[in-house]
Amino acid sequence: MATTAAVTTEGGAPGMADPVGATTTNGSRWRFWLAAAAAFLLLLWLLNDILLPFVVGMVVAYFLDPVVTRLQRLGLSRTMATTAVTIVAVLLTIGIVMAILPPLFGQVQALIAKAPEYFAKASMRIQPLIEPLLHKLGMPPLSTQDLQAKAAQWAGEAFTVVGSVAGQVAQRGVAIINLLGLLFITPVVTFYMLRDWEKVLAAIDGALPLDHADTIRKLARESNAAIAGYLRGQALVCLCLGSIYAIGLSLVGLQFGLAIGLIAGAISFIPFVGTFVGAVMAIGMALAQFPPEWMGVVMVAAVFLFGQTMEGNVLSPKLVGDRVGLHPVWIMFALLAGGSLFGFVGILIAVPTAAVVGVIVRHLIGRYRESAIYRGSNPG
Image 1 (cartoon, rainbow, N blue to C red):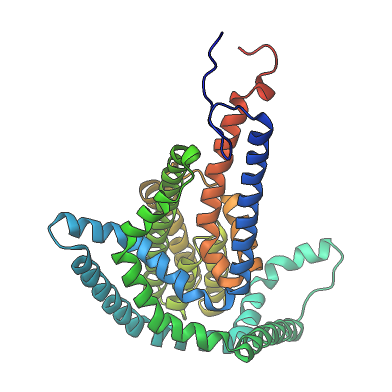
Image 2 (cartoon, rainbow, N blue to C red):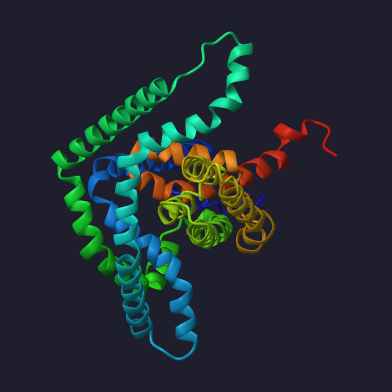
Protein backbone atom coordinates (compact mmCIF):
# COMPACT_ATOMS: atom_id res chain seq x y z
CA MET A 1 0.00 0.00 0.00
CA ALA A 2 1.34 3.38 -0.95
CA THR A 3 2.20 5.69 1.89
CA THR A 4 0.78 9.20 1.71
CA ALA A 5 2.75 12.10 3.15
CA ALA A 6 1.17 13.84 6.06
CA VAL A 7 -0.07 17.30 5.23
CA THR A 8 -0.85 19.71 8.01
CA THR A 9 -3.39 22.36 7.19
CA GLU A 10 -4.37 25.31 9.30
CA GLY A 11 -7.29 24.27 11.44
CA GLY A 12 -7.06 20.64 10.25
CA ALA A 13 -5.47 17.43 11.45
CA PRO A 14 -2.19 16.00 10.15
CA GLY A 15 -2.51 13.55 7.34
CA MET A 16 -5.44 15.27 5.65
CA ALA A 17 -5.14 17.62 2.71
CA ASP A 18 -8.12 19.93 2.64
CA PRO A 19 -8.25 22.15 -0.46
CA VAL A 20 -11.61 23.54 0.62
CA GLY A 21 -10.20 24.41 4.02
CA ALA A 22 -7.17 26.07 2.39
CA THR A 23 -9.47 28.15 0.19
CA THR A 24 -11.51 29.11 3.22
CA THR A 25 -8.34 30.06 5.12
CA ASN A 26 -7.13 32.27 2.26
CA GLY A 27 -10.50 33.98 2.13
CA SER A 28 -10.41 34.52 5.88
CA ARG A 29 -6.95 36.08 5.62
CA TRP A 30 -8.09 38.52 2.98
CA ARG A 31 -11.15 39.46 5.05
CA PHE A 32 -8.97 39.92 8.12
CA TRP A 33 -6.51 42.25 6.39
CA LEU A 34 -9.24 44.24 4.66
CA ALA A 35 -11.07 44.64 7.98
CA ALA A 36 -7.82 45.70 9.69
CA ALA A 37 -7.09 48.29 6.98
CA ALA A 38 -10.66 49.64 7.16
CA ALA A 39 -10.48 49.87 10.96
CA PHE A 40 -7.13 51.70 10.76
CA LEU A 41 -8.45 54.25 8.26
CA LEU A 42 -11.59 54.78 10.32
CA LEU A 43 -9.56 55.30 13.48
CA LEU A 44 -7.27 57.71 11.65
CA TRP A 45 -10.26 59.70 10.43
CA LEU A 46 -11.97 59.78 13.85
CA LEU A 47 -8.81 60.83 15.72
CA ASN A 48 -7.55 63.20 13.03
CA ASP A 49 -7.97 66.30 15.22
CA ILE A 50 -5.58 65.10 17.96
CA LEU A 51 -3.04 63.10 15.95
CA LEU A 52 -0.84 65.99 14.84
CA PRO A 53 1.63 66.07 17.80
CA PHE A 54 1.98 62.28 17.71
CA VAL A 55 2.56 62.15 13.95
CA VAL A 56 5.06 65.02 14.14
CA GLY A 57 6.83 63.25 17.02
CA MET A 58 7.11 60.03 15.02
CA VAL A 59 8.35 61.91 11.94
CA VAL A 60 11.01 63.72 13.98
CA ALA A 61 12.03 60.43 15.61
CA TYR A 62 12.37 58.86 12.17
CA PHE A 63 14.64 61.71 11.08
CA LEU A 64 16.79 61.56 14.22
CA ASP A 65 17.09 57.77 14.57
CA PRO A 66 20.28 57.55 12.42
CA VAL A 67 21.96 60.10 14.72
CA VAL A 68 21.01 58.11 17.83
CA THR A 69 22.21 54.90 16.19
CA ARG A 70 25.56 56.49 15.37
CA LEU A 71 25.97 57.70 18.96
CA GLN A 72 25.22 54.16 20.14
CA ARG A 73 28.08 52.88 17.99
CA LEU A 74 30.34 55.39 19.72
CA GLY A 75 29.59 53.76 23.07
CA LEU A 76 26.57 55.62 24.49
CA SER A 77 23.52 53.74 25.70
CA ARG A 78 20.30 54.09 23.76
CA THR A 79 18.73 56.16 26.56
CA MET A 80 21.71 58.51 26.87
CA ALA A 81 21.99 58.97 23.11
CA THR A 82 18.25 59.66 22.87
CA THR A 83 18.40 62.19 25.72
CA ALA A 84 21.34 64.05 24.18
CA VAL A 85 19.81 64.17 20.70
CA THR A 86 16.40 65.26 22.01
CA ILE A 87 17.85 68.07 24.13
CA VAL A 88 19.99 69.36 21.26
CA ALA A 89 17.06 69.18 18.83
CA VAL A 90 14.75 71.08 21.22
CA LEU A 91 17.37 73.78 21.87
CA LEU A 92 18.08 74.20 18.17
CA THR A 93 14.36 74.43 17.40
CA ILE A 94 13.82 77.07 20.10
CA GLY A 95 16.82 79.07 18.87
CA ILE A 96 15.74 78.99 15.23
CA VAL A 97 12.15 79.87 16.11
CA MET A 98 13.19 82.83 18.26
CA ALA A 99 15.62 84.07 15.62
CA ILE A 100 13.41 83.73 12.54
CA LEU A 101 9.76 83.88 13.56
CA PRO A 102 9.52 87.48 14.87
CA PRO A 103 10.88 89.15 11.70
CA LEU A 104 9.11 86.55 9.57
CA PHE A 105 5.72 87.23 11.16
CA GLY A 106 6.29 90.96 10.83
CA GLN A 107 7.08 90.66 7.13
CA VAL A 108 4.15 88.31 6.46
CA GLN A 109 1.73 90.63 8.26
CA ALA A 110 2.97 93.67 6.33
CA LEU A 111 2.94 91.71 3.07
CA ILE A 112 -0.69 90.68 3.55
CA ALA A 113 -1.71 94.22 4.45
CA LYS A 114 0.00 95.78 1.43
CA ALA A 115 -0.67 93.00 -1.09
CA PRO A 116 -3.42 94.91 -3.00
CA GLU A 117 -1.23 98.00 -3.33
CA TYR A 118 1.76 96.02 -4.58
CA PHE A 119 -0.41 93.99 -6.94
CA ALA A 120 -1.75 97.17 -8.49
CA LYS A 121 1.77 98.60 -8.88
CA ALA A 122 3.07 95.41 -10.49
CA SER A 123 0.08 95.35 -12.82
CA MET A 124 0.78 98.91 -13.89
CA ARG A 125 4.37 97.91 -14.78
CA ILE A 126 3.27 95.07 -17.02
CA GLN A 127 0.18 96.81 -18.39
CA PRO A 128 2.04 98.38 -21.37
CA LEU A 129 3.33 94.90 -22.23
CA ILE A 130 -0.07 93.23 -22.34
CA GLU A 131 -2.11 96.07 -23.86
CA PRO A 132 -1.17 95.08 -27.46
CA LEU A 133 -2.29 91.53 -26.70
CA LEU A 134 -5.58 92.77 -25.24
CA HIS A 135 -6.10 94.96 -28.29
CA LYS A 136 -5.56 92.00 -30.64
CA LEU A 137 -8.02 89.92 -28.65
CA GLY A 138 -10.60 92.70 -28.79
CA MET A 139 -10.60 93.19 -25.01
CA PRO A 140 -10.82 96.66 -23.42
CA PRO A 141 -7.67 97.95 -21.68
CA LEU A 142 -7.56 97.88 -17.88
CA SER A 143 -7.28 101.20 -16.08
CA THR A 144 -5.40 101.77 -12.85
CA GLN A 145 -8.69 102.05 -10.95
CA ASP A 146 -9.84 98.72 -12.36
CA LEU A 147 -6.60 97.05 -11.30
CA GLN A 148 -6.81 98.44 -7.78
CA ALA A 149 -10.45 97.43 -7.50
CA LYS A 150 -9.69 93.91 -8.71
CA ALA A 151 -6.76 93.61 -6.33
CA ALA A 152 -8.86 94.77 -3.38
CA GLN A 153 -11.64 92.36 -4.36
CA TRP A 154 -9.30 89.36 -4.61
CA ALA A 155 -7.58 90.24 -1.35
CA GLY A 156 -10.94 90.59 0.39
CA GLU A 157 -12.10 87.22 -0.90
CA ALA A 158 -8.85 85.59 0.21
CA PHE A 159 -9.10 87.11 3.69
CA THR A 160 -12.73 85.97 3.93
CA VAL A 161 -11.79 82.38 3.11
CA VAL A 162 -8.82 82.37 5.47
CA GLY A 163 -10.87 83.96 8.24
CA SER A 164 -13.68 81.45 7.79
CA VAL A 165 -11.31 78.49 7.96
CA ALA A 166 -9.48 79.95 10.95
CA GLY A 167 -12.78 80.60 12.71
CA GLN A 168 -14.00 77.07 12.19
CA VAL A 169 -10.72 75.63 13.42
CA ALA A 170 -10.72 77.88 16.48
CA GLN A 171 -14.34 77.03 17.31
CA ARG A 172 -13.53 73.35 17.32
CA GLY A 173 -10.60 73.96 19.64
CA VAL A 174 -8.31 72.09 17.29
CA ALA A 175 -5.83 74.96 16.96
CA ILE A 176 -5.28 75.25 20.71
CA ILE A 177 -5.05 71.49 21.19
CA ASN A 178 -2.55 71.09 18.36
CA LEU A 179 -0.47 74.08 19.48
CA LEU A 180 -0.23 72.81 23.03
CA GLY A 181 0.41 69.31 21.74
CA LEU A 182 3.22 70.47 19.47
CA LEU A 183 4.82 72.39 22.35
CA PHE A 184 4.57 69.76 25.08
CA ILE A 185 3.57 66.37 23.67
CA THR A 186 5.75 66.22 20.55
CA PRO A 187 9.11 66.30 22.43
CA VAL A 188 7.87 63.54 24.77
CA VAL A 189 6.65 61.39 21.87
CA THR A 190 9.92 61.99 20.04
CA PHE A 191 11.97 60.93 23.09
CA TYR A 192 10.10 57.71 23.75
CA MET A 193 9.89 56.76 20.07
CA LEU A 194 13.64 57.30 19.70
CA ARG A 195 14.44 55.36 22.86
CA ASP A 196 12.18 52.41 21.99
CA TRP A 197 12.61 52.50 18.20
CA GLU A 198 14.41 49.15 18.03
CA LYS A 199 11.89 47.55 20.41
CA VAL A 200 8.97 48.81 18.31
CA LEU A 201 10.54 47.42 15.13
CA ALA A 202 11.24 44.10 16.86
CA ALA A 203 7.64 43.89 18.09
CA ILE A 204 6.29 44.58 14.61
CA ASP A 205 8.68 42.04 13.11
CA GLY A 206 7.58 39.42 15.63
CA ALA A 207 3.92 39.96 14.74
CA LEU A 208 4.36 39.35 11.00
CA PRO A 209 2.48 36.38 9.54
CA LEU A 210 5.04 33.59 9.23
CA ASP A 211 4.05 32.54 5.72
CA HIS A 212 4.80 35.99 4.29
CA ALA A 213 7.34 37.39 6.77
CA ASP A 214 10.29 37.36 4.35
CA THR A 215 8.30 39.11 1.61
CA ILE A 216 7.00 41.74 4.05
CA ARG A 217 10.53 42.36 5.37
CA LYS A 218 11.81 42.81 1.80
CA LEU A 219 9.02 45.27 0.99
CA ALA A 220 9.63 47.09 4.30
CA ARG A 221 13.33 47.52 3.48
CA GLU A 222 12.50 48.89 0.03
CA SER A 223 9.83 51.20 1.48
CA ASN A 224 12.22 52.48 4.15
CA ALA A 225 14.87 53.19 1.50
CA ALA A 226 12.34 55.14 -0.57
CA ILE A 227 10.95 57.05 2.42
CA ALA A 228 14.34 57.85 3.92
CA GLY A 229 15.81 58.80 0.56
CA TYR A 230 12.98 61.17 -0.24
CA LEU A 231 12.01 62.66 3.14
CA ARG A 232 15.48 63.22 4.56
CA GLY A 233 16.87 64.30 1.22
CA GLN A 234 13.93 66.55 0.34
CA ALA A 235 14.00 68.17 3.78
CA LEU A 236 17.62 69.17 3.19
CA VAL A 237 16.73 70.40 -0.30
CA CYS A 238 13.93 72.59 1.11
CA LEU A 239 16.25 73.94 3.81
CA CYS A 240 18.96 74.78 1.27
CA LEU A 241 16.52 76.38 -1.18
CA GLY A 242 14.83 78.39 1.57
CA SER A 243 18.24 79.69 2.67
CA ILE A 244 19.29 80.51 -0.91
CA TYR A 245 16.06 82.34 -1.69
CA ALA A 246 15.78 84.18 1.65
CA ILE A 247 19.42 85.31 1.74
CA GLY A 248 19.56 86.11 -1.98
CA LEU A 249 16.35 88.15 -2.04
CA SER A 250 17.36 90.00 1.11
CA LEU A 251 20.78 90.84 -0.36
CA VAL A 252 19.27 92.30 -3.54
CA GLY A 253 17.08 94.52 -1.37
CA LEU A 254 13.67 93.02 -2.11
CA GLN A 255 11.03 94.00 0.42
CA PHE A 256 9.71 90.98 2.33
CA GLY A 257 12.50 88.92 0.75
CA LEU A 258 12.99 86.86 3.92
CA ALA A 259 9.32 85.86 4.09
CA ILE A 260 9.02 85.12 0.36
CA GLY A 261 12.25 83.10 0.31
CA LEU A 262 11.35 80.98 3.32
CA ILE A 263 7.83 80.37 1.99
CA ALA A 264 9.24 79.28 -1.37
CA GLY A 265 11.71 76.95 0.29
CA ALA A 266 9.16 75.49 2.70
CA ILE A 267 6.75 74.44 -0.06
CA SER A 268 9.47 73.21 -2.42
CA PHE A 269 8.67 69.64 -1.34
CA ILE A 270 5.71 69.94 -3.74
CA PRO A 271 7.32 69.49 -7.17
CA PHE A 272 7.47 72.73 -9.20
CA VAL A 273 4.96 74.49 -6.91
CA GLY A 274 7.40 76.00 -4.44
CA THR A 275 9.62 77.58 -7.06
CA PHE A 276 6.67 78.77 -9.15
CA VAL A 277 4.84 80.38 -6.23
CA GLY A 278 8.02 81.95 -4.87
CA ALA A 279 9.09 83.27 -8.27
CA VAL A 280 5.67 84.80 -8.95
CA MET A 281 5.59 86.47 -5.53
CA ALA A 282 9.19 87.71 -5.73
CA ILE A 283 9.08 88.98 -9.32
CA GLY A 284 5.69 90.58 -8.71
CA MET A 285 7.11 92.36 -5.65
CA ALA A 286 10.18 93.38 -7.66
CA LEU A 287 7.98 94.84 -10.41
CA ALA A 288 6.18 96.91 -7.78
CA GLN A 289 9.36 98.04 -6.05
CA PHE A 290 12.30 98.49 -8.43
CA PRO A 291 11.22 99.99 -11.80
CA PRO A 292 12.24 102.18 -13.50
CA GLU A 293 15.48 100.55 -12.23
CA TRP A 294 14.98 97.18 -13.92
CA MET A 295 18.26 95.72 -12.66
CA GLY A 296 16.57 94.83 -9.38
CA VAL A 297 13.97 92.74 -11.22
CA VAL A 298 16.74 90.99 -13.15
CA MET A 299 18.62 90.23 -9.91
CA VAL A 300 15.50 88.78 -8.28
CA ALA A 301 14.94 86.54 -11.31
CA ALA A 302 18.63 85.58 -11.18
CA VAL A 303 18.23 84.43 -7.54
CA PHE A 304 15.49 81.98 -8.53
CA LEU A 305 17.39 80.90 -11.63
CA PHE A 306 20.41 80.17 -9.44
CA GLY A 307 18.25 78.28 -6.94
CA GLN A 308 16.69 76.15 -9.68
CA THR A 309 20.10 75.44 -11.19
CA MET A 310 21.43 74.34 -7.81
CA GLU A 311 18.39 72.17 -7.15
CA GLY A 312 18.41 70.45 -10.53
CA ASN A 313 22.16 69.89 -10.84
CA VAL A 314 23.46 69.62 -7.27
CA LEU A 315 20.90 69.43 -4.47
CA SER A 316 18.33 66.94 -5.74
CA PRO A 317 20.83 64.58 -7.46
CA LYS A 318 23.11 64.51 -4.40
CA LEU A 319 20.54 64.57 -1.58
CA VAL A 320 17.53 62.80 -3.10
CA GLY A 321 18.71 61.00 -6.22
CA ASP A 322 16.68 58.79 -8.53
CA ARG A 323 16.57 55.74 -6.28
CA VAL A 324 13.38 56.68 -4.45
CA GLY A 325 11.10 55.80 -7.37
CA LEU A 326 8.52 58.52 -6.65
CA HIS A 327 7.19 60.34 -9.70
CA PRO A 328 6.42 64.06 -9.17
CA VAL A 329 2.82 63.60 -10.35
CA TRP A 330 2.33 60.75 -7.87
CA ILE A 331 3.72 62.92 -5.07
CA MET A 332 1.40 65.82 -5.92
CA PHE A 333 -1.60 63.48 -6.05
CA ALA A 334 -0.68 61.94 -2.70
CA LEU A 335 -0.29 65.35 -1.05
CA LEU A 336 -3.63 66.60 -2.37
CA ALA A 337 -5.42 63.37 -1.46
CA GLY A 338 -3.88 63.26 2.03
CA GLY A 339 -4.69 66.90 2.72
CA SER A 340 -8.25 66.49 1.46
CA LEU A 341 -8.93 63.38 3.55
CA PHE A 342 -7.03 64.05 6.80
CA GLY A 343 -5.91 67.69 6.74
CA PHE A 344 -2.38 68.55 7.81
CA VAL A 345 -1.86 65.08 9.29
CA GLY A 346 -2.69 63.67 5.87
CA ILE A 347 -0.06 65.91 4.27
CA LEU A 348 2.55 64.63 6.74
CA ILE A 349 1.84 60.97 6.01
CA ALA A 350 1.11 61.41 2.29
CA VAL A 351 4.63 60.91 0.95
CA PRO A 352 5.50 57.91 3.17
CA THR A 353 2.19 56.31 2.20
CA ALA A 354 2.85 57.03 -1.47
CA ALA A 355 6.30 55.45 -1.17
CA VAL A 356 4.90 52.30 0.44
CA VAL A 357 2.09 52.04 -2.12
CA GLY A 358 4.63 52.48 -4.92
CA VAL A 359 6.81 49.67 -3.57
CA ILE A 360 3.80 47.35 -3.17
CA VAL A 361 2.52 48.13 -6.67
CA ARG A 362 5.95 47.41 -8.19
CA HIS A 363 6.07 44.12 -6.26
CA LEU A 364 2.60 43.11 -7.47
CA ILE A 365 3.50 44.02 -11.05
CA GLY A 366 6.61 41.84 -10.76
CA ARG A 367 4.53 38.94 -9.42
CA TYR A 368 2.03 39.47 -12.24
CA ARG A 369 4.78 39.30 -14.88
CA GLU A 370 5.96 36.02 -13.39
CA SER A 371 2.48 34.51 -13.37
CA ALA A 372 0.70 32.38 -15.96
CA ILE A 373 -1.85 35.16 -16.41
CA TYR A 374 0.81 37.37 -18.02
CA ARG A 375 2.95 34.67 -19.66
CA GLY A 376 0.02 32.73 -21.10
CA SER A 377 0.24 29.15 -22.31
CA ASN A 378 3.55 29.64 -24.15
CA PRO A 379 5.99 31.22 -21.64
CA GLY A 380 9.36 32.19 -22.94
